[in-house]
Image 1 (cartoon, rainbow, N blue to C red):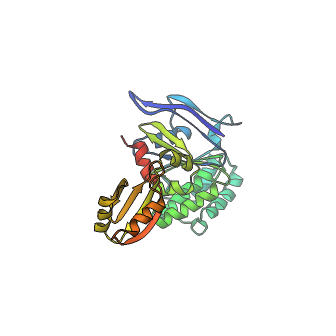
Image 2: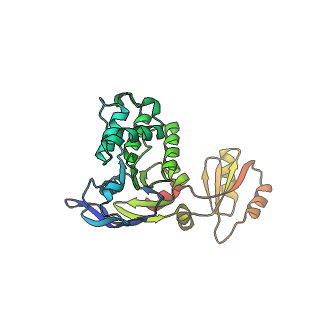
Image 3: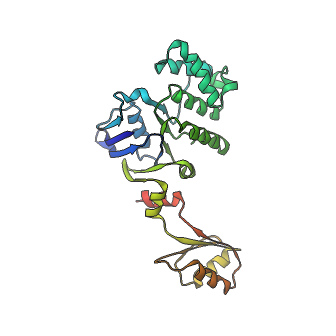
Length: 294
């Protein structure tokens, strides 16, 4: 288990991270979520040992010097363009404490794992964006860290590349605890065990997705109409509280009313053409706006 207690970072008179505390269970997948400037990168940099905290502590159970147990992928990883992929990972393996004899073997093994087996002898300058992201992950995991820190690991990738990297991260979770920052909320919604919402350097909400939903979700029924005018017409006539988005009307449930049966009965007697009716819940993006909005 990793325990972060009262982590604080000041730059002069400006406090960019303020009294942040959380725990990471072994093998967990935790997302740092927040708008730009919320302190995500600063927190990761302090955990990685790249920035000295102004206050607070980071402890890993049973480990005195946690830096040896950390792998870090910055948001914009840099590579030596004259080195091949395998040469670069061999170099980082040696810097991580792996012997010269074992570094090459581990480099080849980890490059195969991240899907770069056929490109290990290419210069890193020839790598595409997706290949560089895989190479960055390879350098972060070559020494088999217990804690993997990833700063926006898929932000610069297209949808196909993002999916490939997220699938790779699922495999990595089997051997590492993962903490990553992201602004792509669909990814966090799909595969994260714990969410940490940051706002102006503070953790303003944390918990599992289910816990966050239970706290902020608003029960509602989603009705899709054939057209925008029909949606607006239904919304203006019903007695229930509604919100209209194009040809979709959200009917909000308060104190257990209306029920689905009541809504269906009302729709059956209306002149409007209904395409679909279903129970609905707030997306993580909508919850995010509730949590971090001023």
